[in-house]
Length: 294
Image 1: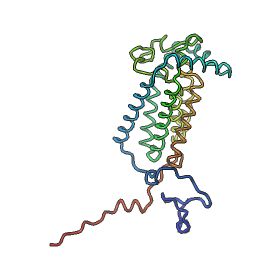
Image 2 (image 1 turned 120 degrees about the vertical axis):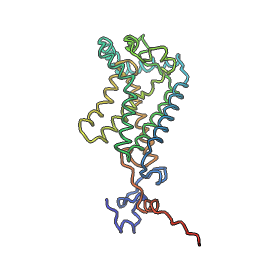
Image 3 (image 1 turned 135 degrees about the vertical axis):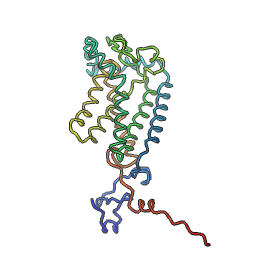
Image 4 (image 1 turned 90 degrees about the horizontal axis):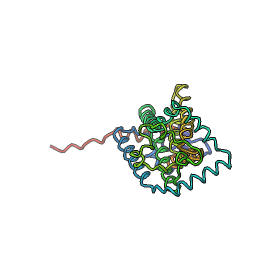
């Protein structure tokens, strides 16, 4: 929509220079307009922010009490609930994966590595290729991760692989996957009862949505759409999560999107507006330094 003199005279122009649709009032978010306008992200600031936030996340996640008895009780409760709802195909998929070592090994390494590699790669891609979207998308994944931390603390949950009485097979342990949580040296530094919600699903949904909405090539967009589905099959096939964990992973991702909308008043994947021309002119023009008299 083109901003006209009539729009300006009628007061229908937003602070970012765009004209509002007549008769409609759009929610503009709780942050001030100057914080919502596009500013070129600086790589060193972003690395510092992401590194600090990830360190905080890791420390808090592993400081959550590993209440084994409570987590196992919650695990039994989730199993009984899924049996009652007939959402109990985890065991069938897990048994199939465990019976085929090549599939199990691929899934194990997928679970252990791609969770971080793909997420970091998508962040870098958004930073480089879509800077006007980057900050909003980054807010979503940060909010999603913080909300998941609350879930880990409030509801410690033993994953299916730690409930062998129900017939689950820990493929990480059976096939001795390098770097897996079945390795005591790795497990002692990680909270194995931080399963609810599934952050693998939360992060993979963020990656998938980001790729699908921002990529130009259709085959890349399709890969983005498939990625969360593959992640769901992996977390269930390796007995690292219940289906209900995945459902709550979706919920926390949607809440993360809601937090971003509350802050900015726009979708995370809507480009941040450029500053109004008057503000740009004010930044570019520098007042002349008064000359001292001779």
